[in-house]
Length: 211
Image (cartoon, rainbow, N blue to C red; front, top):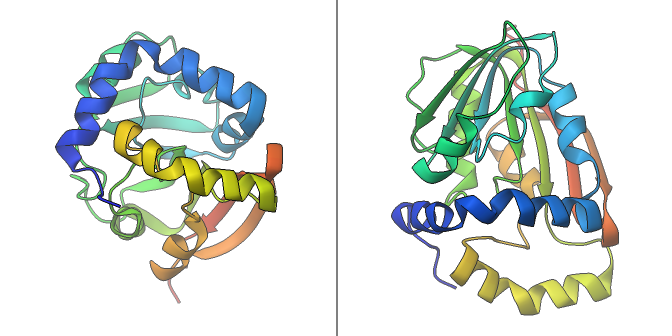
């Protein structure tokens, strides 16, 4: 299976930007459940949101969050994110960029949030390494993602669909996010499965503190 390039992923999301909210909203209601709200509620301090998309999380950030920097490959989705209403006092910056090569200093954010982005990032391992670098010691990586179902029949169906999903939507259906986080050095504090067929991951991972 050919991995779409960064440019191809940006093109797919630019073309689909106006339809994205409707499509992901239906998929979350019918399949994924409430993992998005759970993920945002774990965030605090200075937040980096990787693959921020159309900014669906931005109105959900509460008082524990000081600022949000959202990065995405697609200018089309960022243009929509710019229109989101957010909590008064929340500092939000949106930038076009590649989360596999973050333009941020070491140890500069308290929380990294990823909601349904590992499925499209070309190299999630590299993105995890970058997240590890920019998080403060003891900082948290919060992830909500879809992946291989716990249900065998659903997983078999996903195997059939996956090549078409990757080719036309730059969306990997069968990626398990946990190995990428572990290989980058994160400690997995919580990991739960849910959604229809067990396709949804809710993960809290932590950058080790200094000795």
